[in-house]
Image (cartoon, rainbow, N blue to C red; front, side):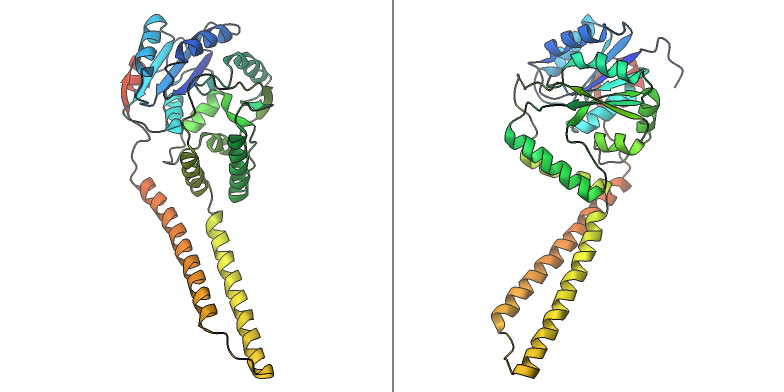
Length: 318
């Protein structure tokens, strides 16, 4: 790729999914917020085939303002793949990643930018108080606790995708091409100098979240399998624990027969134990199969996403 001229100071990467009701407001507030720190910027809106009018609105925004770059994926790949597409095509010295639902306000970008200029490569936006339903907050807390335990990586549940990163961080993330994508974990693995600042978190005003609890569960399982082998090690420990308990139980029953003449336990206890151990064995085999399936997907070497249409020549030709 040739060296590009007029490199923007700031790129904003936003995955878009069923956001037709808020895109105009998102653009207006972004424009106002970013222009308080620089006039040289670009906004990349990555439309993930939500099936609504989002793409036509993005095309109209791009016609009105050439700094808006629209990329539509060939099908619905998922939020983290859309972020990957945006990072692959952004050109700014600094890159902001945020969601499209306006829960993370664009007005926080100048704060992130000024903090980054103090010498940080990554600045994360912390939500002092989440404007989400209680159930969603509880599920989120449980996920991050389980994820931190099973991956031995500590994640702050107050963070989302909203953050700013230097060019060298973006270039480093472009090298990470594993099939299972979890943006926050990839950034954490990359390292670099990180700062955190508090940014308000607004309530959703348009539509509803498309992350159902089943989708969140699938994302959680996929993410844990992708970033840690600890579940396999826990399965081994559990197997040894069950074996040790079985040996102790065998010694106890033998001692009762020898010293007290007690009869051996009947068929009921044996059948219950058989079904219990069979369930454990099948579960562990399934866990191994899950890891094997992820290895199979990685071995295919398929691209992480495909672009169906774009408003930018750069996005079409790269």
